[in-house]
Each structure stands twice: as C-alpha cells, then as structure tokens.
Figure 1 (spheres, rainbow, N blue to C red):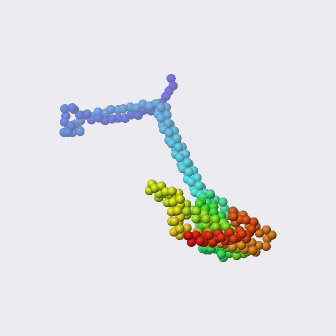
Figure 2 (figure 1 turned 60 degrees about the vertical axis):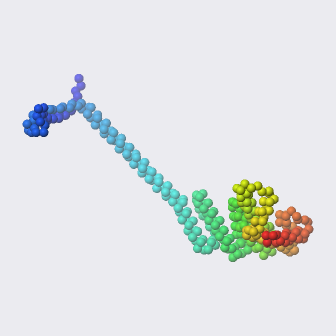
Figure 3 (figure 1 turned 180 degrees about the vertical axis):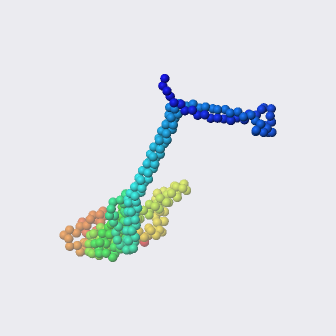
Length: 316
C-alpha cells in the first residue's frame, strides 16, 4: 500500500460549564467547572497542496487579465493621442492658416484673393469656397473693379456674375448690375457689339427681378383669398395685383432699371451699326429679339420705340 503523508492540526478548546440550578447573574466565574476539549483536523498532504496550487493559479489568471486590460487601455490612449494629432494637422492647422489668410485679406482692404495651397477635408474646402465668394461679393460692393484696368475689371465682374447666377436661387439683381457694368466698360472702349450683349443680359436680369416680385405678390394675395374662403376671377386678381405692384418701390425701381438698360442696349446697337468697320455688322439674334428684320436701322428704331414704351409705363 502506498505511503502518504498527512497534515495534522490540533485545536484545544476550554469550556466553563455552569450548573443548571445556579443563577447566571450571581454566579462567580471561578466557581464554574472547567473542561478542555481538543479538536483534531487531519488532511492528506496531496489534497492540501492541491487546494493551495489552485488558488495560486487563480491569482495568476487574474494577474494576466489585469495585464491585458492595462495593455488595452494603454493602446487606446496611444491611438487617441495619434488620432488627435492627425486631427490637429488636418483640421486645426488648416483652420489657423485660413484664419491668418483672412486676417491679412481684411487688413489689405479685401483687395487680395484667397487661395488654398494644400488639399484638406471636404468641409474645409467648402469653407474656402464660401470665403472666396464672400471676398468677390465684397469687392463687387466696394466697386473695386473701378480701380483696375478695363480688361481686369471685366474679368472680376464676369467672375462675380457667374457666382451670382450659380446661386440657388440666382441673384438676378446682383448679376444684372454686373452685366450692366461690363456693358458700360465695353461701351466706353468702343466694343459696342459686346456691350449690347451684356446690356441685353442686364435687361433680362431686370425682367427676372420683376417676375419674382410679381410671383411673390400673386402668391401672397392668393393665400389671403384662400384663407378668407373667397373665390376671385383670374382677371380681377391680376388687376388687383398690378394695382398694388404699381405702388411698391422695388417694382418701380426695376421698371426704371429695365427701361434704362434697354436704352443702353439701343444705343450700343445704334453705335455698332454706325461705327462698325467689320465687313459683317450682324448682331446676335438674341440681342434684337423676335421682331428683327433684314433692315438694321428699322431694328434700331424698334429698340428705341421699346425704350419710349418702357419709360411711359404707369409705374414710372
């Protein structure tokens, strides 16, 4: 039979026993009888050591888990630091650069242009575009093109015009002013055919503004009648709309603008026909409209008749 070692644990216990007839409150402890009991625990050595080993293994597993958790936390902090640094390089640094550029442009009176030298996020690129449009608009408001040579002024005005026409909805008022200023420069330099084209575009822009004002007034009055549950005939509604429009400042203003630009258009066409040294003095069909004929001077007369009719409107 295999020999096996045992571990023995002896625990002595001392007991003081009291007689059941004695009063527990008055009995002196020295009068109690004393008894000693010994308890003995017997363990196999293999069983005892196995339990200790299991506890040690459990602690090692816990330590490994703690190490793994610490490594994960450290890696997360490292990645967060890396991402924040990259974010700083991709966002905050370009933002600071944009801020410094805008400060320099403002200090120079909005005369410089804004350029984006390096690629960045889509949001920052869109922000650059917004600031570029803002600078162009400010230059346009300040009439900076008047301080430049004619060719450069036309380029600036054309860029501003493209910006205004590409807006949603298009800014017909600002675009019309650009067309008109381009036409004035070209008229001054004797490019009457080009001036006529831009004055024509200016006239169309003024008409667009008038249409927008009329559309807004029509929508407003229609809503008023609908809320009041009143049915109005179309002709009566149009008459009331026109009566109210004739008293509005914007309606009067754009009618004057349309009439004046039509006059500039007629003068450009007249001077083109009179002073043009080209073998072919035909103009773009869109400039003269649907009523043009082969007689160029008749076409000029028709344009001046339109000018008189526009200036004789009730609004003016």
